[in-house]
Length: 189
Image (cartoon, rainbow, N blue to C red; front, side, top):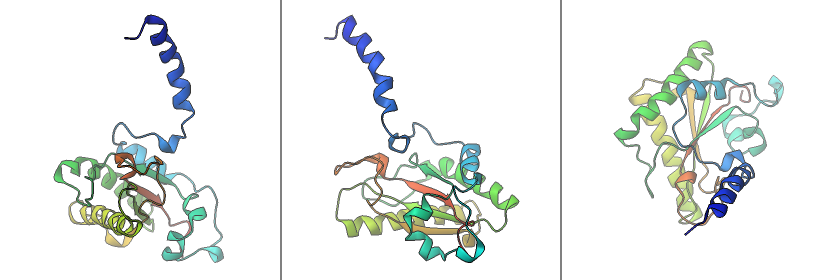
C-alpha cells in the first residue's frame, strides 16, 4: 500500500517522466479531429524542393529523409487487430474524419497527393510484417475510395512493416499498428 508521501512523489515525477518521452512515442488517446488532420497535412513542408529535384512516388517511398520533411500525422486510433489488415465497420467513424480532412484539402488543392503508410508491431517475421503493413495501407485506401468517395489517383500506399516503430519493443504493441498520412505533392513530379 502506498503512503501519502509516495503518492505525492509519484504525482510530481510523472509529468517529468512523460515529458522525457518523444512526442512520436506517445499513443493517441483519441482519434484526431478532421480539423487537426487537415491542419497537420496542410502545414508547409519542412523543406521546399525545387521542381527539377522532385522525385517519383517510388523514390519518395524509399527516402526516409524526404518522408520526414513532408507534412504528416500518425493515426493510431484505427484499431487493427493483431495479425489483421481489416478495417471493421466500427472504425468507419474514425476513417470518416480522415476522409473529410483529405476531401477538404483536395477541394482547395486538386493536385494534392497523399501517401498512406501502413505499420505493424515487431511480432512475426520482417517479411510477413512488410506484407501486412502494405495490406493495412491498401485497406485504408480501399475504404476511403469505396465508402467515402475519395479519388483513387490522390492516394498512394506503402507498407513499412516494423521498420519505424513508435514504441521500440519486440512484443505485441497496438501503438505500432497504425497508419501514417503524408501529403507528398510538394516532393513528387
